[in-house]
Image 1 (cartoon, helix red, strand yellow):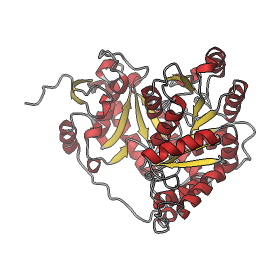
Image 2 (image 1 turned 135 degrees about the vertical axis):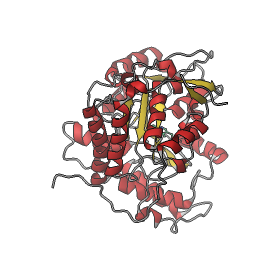
Image 3 (image 1 turned 180 degrees about the horizontal axis):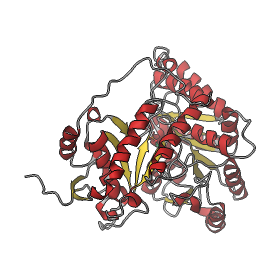
Image 4 (image 1 turned 90 degrees about the vertical axis):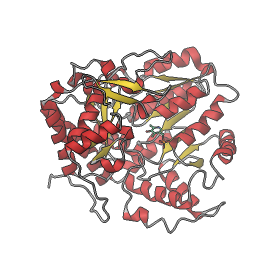
Length: 463
Ligand SMILES: *Cc1c(COP(=O)(O)O)cnc(C)c1O
């Protein structure tokens, strides 16, 4: 049998409330053309994020009662710790309420009294990672390979670190670099993977300069699956073995349990260095909680432990990656410009290429995202000039790309939902010339995409 099916059946469902185009036109107007302001009940297919939106398994739900809520020394912690260590054999495992809390603690350690003058290179820093480092005065530098910046260029590992630029940086700035980081998969760069060879060579450079290598690990299992599929020499390796090899090159990791552990909340920091671990636990107690629960309840830790075993199952990963490729291929065949190859957790549409009549500062990505909502009730995030266009001095500049991200929650939607997404975009693509740009009528001083209000150009403002 060649057909790939969802490797699960459905035991509990959440009804979707169907709405009409007319209702959605009103709802998006009331939300000031910002999809973040919509109520999730008014959305038919929600592709805003794959974070915390996974469907937990019966095995995970059954762990809720097993959660031991003792303040100190809970068996749930030890089961969580063992499940992490099975894949990522670090000496110290420090539980946090989500990924950014682990990043915050790591930042406090490496910044010390002041982060000014320090530099942390990464293939591409994720928003919260960058915000944590920059808030402490540290310069967050992105050194992804050039191929990773070209949406249409096909390359198996577009998330790789540019080793030449990393070496030049280490040569010049060695004293100012507290650690080197790799984000797998490269979320901000389209969910593109990093090869084992690149992880190994990044580690070799780190060793030469005496720097620890940390892995920002939200989508480690998707990355391991891409290695198995695309990198010579790994076809016969098991996913857990690939994961263990990936982490054998790292000195520590931060993790968002809201992605590749099927949990709705949770995370951790793991590391080998005893001194840093001691400092991390001190920060943890101040900001999160006691070291055997950190920011999580016992039942959260049980769900993470169970989810970690499920996420490395090959049938799941095969379905996961294939279901995203499936949508990407269908859109590509229709002529809709998509980032290629498909990333591990999302389909990215190049809205600037699809809507060349809308200039970047009239937010083609936002125009497409609004059209997807009105046409099909689909919610997707703009990642472009609306999100990044505002400069620190208040002026506007186009972002490098104007993309719309269709992030797929794990185990939530079926193939017919995928077909519906494709049909919605086919319809919009057929009348793409009619889409209009938008203007911002109100914005906050920073992170405007979450709350800004917009209005379509060429339509009268409602009284
Ligand atoms: C989501 C994410 C984070 C932050 O994790 P949260 O759990 O959302 O705080 C950090 N890095 C990457 C790559 C992520 O995708």
